[in-house]
Length: 67
Image (cartoon, rainbow, N blue to C red; front, top):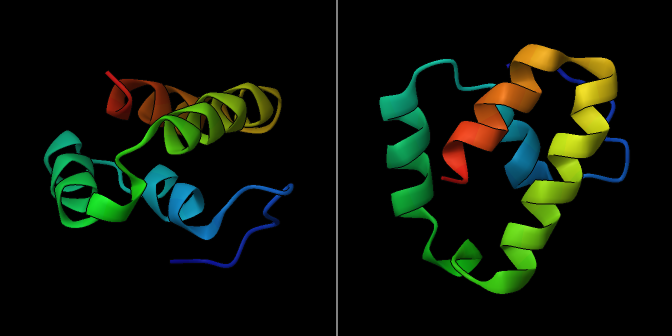
């Protein structure tokens, strides 16, 4: 995965945004039980807002992953 500026976004969100396939995103989230909490969901939401200004494809992937 290429290194990207993180805009104050946690690394797991950047990693998640880099996964182009839905199945990969589901597997990633399933393997990260530590991020199954309200704070992580709020971080993901905030990241979607940030990435929407920078990279719409990644914002869309993250939004899909949160559903």
